[in-house]
Length: 195
Image 1 (tube, one colour):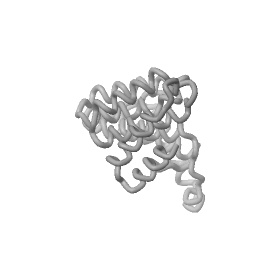
Image 2 (cartoon, one colour; image 1 turned 180 degrees about the vertical axis):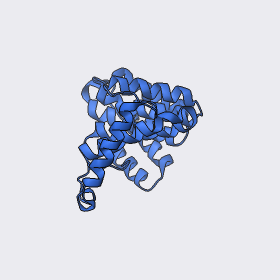
Image 3 (cartoon, one colour; image 1 turned 90 degrees about the vertical axis):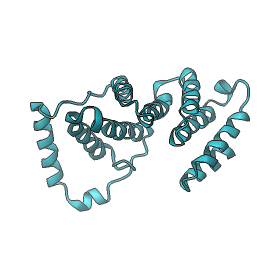
Image 4 (tube, one colour; image 1 turned 45 degrees about the vertical axis):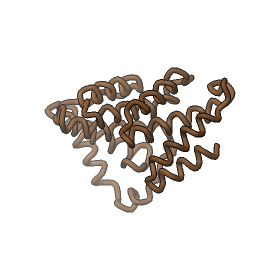
């Protein structure tokens, strides 16, 4: 647990190199049957290692830790952030089409509607409805909006933010749909660092 805490503290100081080493060190101390006896700690360490490796642009390490987590996770939600890290690593490697397709697969698994083209009639109606909601919502209410603590929602927002970056180069006509979904999630579930 100490390596995980120290690694997270290093990230708060933007020291991803130290964080990655701390996560690796923590993984080395796990029991041989850690996916059974230390499941939550294993998920946290492998997830953190994959994400730190991604930030450091170490695609091989990110893939290694992500693959281990994904193959041992007991449910989809436990592997969600690692899947996000894998899609982000593809983007960092300029594999934009692959990153977009990977993100679409993840969104479909989560039951999300895939982004619609900007000329879609229903999208235009939905955007106008959201605009009306935002205009009728007092600024004070938005400023005091609670932060969401739901890990799934935060990861979903990170997926959409990564997708938005990718779409600038692959399919710009989908960006407005992604933006609308991010605003919708924020209004329904609360603020987060991506909001």
